[in-house]
Image (tube, rainbow, N blue to C red):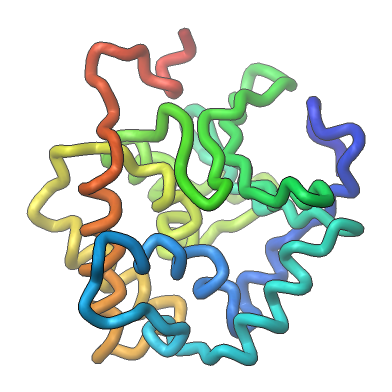
Length: 207
């Protein structure tokens, strides 16, 4: 697999890892644990356990293999999530792809904390809800939504945001009784981070 700018990385398709127990704890649990929460986040919120999470962590953050999760969109830009496993510099990169261009643009990263421009709710859901069935990658809308959730930097979330997040978590295996807890902590984290400045050009504007 080749992606411009990642020539030195041993990129490998990672979509099959989404069905493995422990994926969502690795991808989202860190976003649940800041801000002085009364109860510590646990993998069980996602229907997983610590052993699942640890086992898959060894796969996701293996320096010999950098999992790539493709989120192609049918109408406009799509996204790519790369587990960047440089020795001593582990992180997750979020790239924007465009149907009319071969290059990609990094719009955000996660290295223990979020950096980058992020997306508004409308931009995130537009990609999540418009899978391109003619391309390789993640097609399930709930999975697409959760993969890109760390990009959210919108202070004006709709009233339906919590219900949509709970439904997406339940769709990937979170128990009904804990999906709402995980959603509450995730949204609290997203609301605390620096917000998307409406004066900035959107990363999806093509400018």
